[in-house]
Image 1 (cartoon, rainbow, N blue to C red):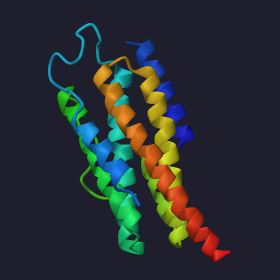
Image 2 (image 1 turned 180 degrees about the vertical axis):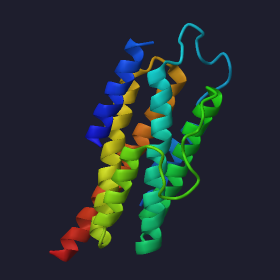
Image 3 (image 1 turned 90 degrees about the horizontal axis):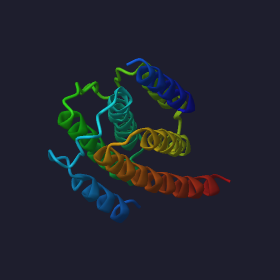
Image 4 (image 1 turned 45 degrees about the vertical axis):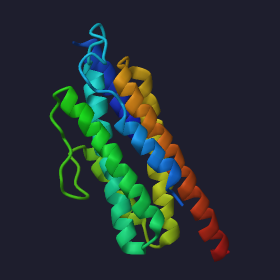
Length: 195
């Protein structure tokens, strides 16, 4: 995902130049719902840039990737952490969709699980799913996804001046840190039992 971030930031720069998991998740999800998207909540002097548009659309699909992976892993392994975090990721997807609607962008996310318009995200998804053979590797996939989310969201926060976009990204970032912590904690327990 570092490659995705680098490619995304390079593209954004070019465009600019030319023209158990319950309490913390529910609190973060509720705060995402509270982010103000009404007209007037964004200063008129701050314009939506091409990089902002690309970032919003990218994060919509990256949150979908997390959701789709965790939903499938819950089916495959039945561990509650996957269901809890998949539910949280759906709220993150919805938050990004609200930004897309507010700024009148065209949603690039498909409704089909495991399918993505962004080719790098599609490759990442395919590679992740192919690497999963047991619960430990499934949890490790969660670690990889959340680590990538943290890196990508942090980069997007740095390049936007839009307050409401920063707020949504910040809530997503907090959620990703919580998700990462949960996956790492459970993975440690699973691996310790295997040794």
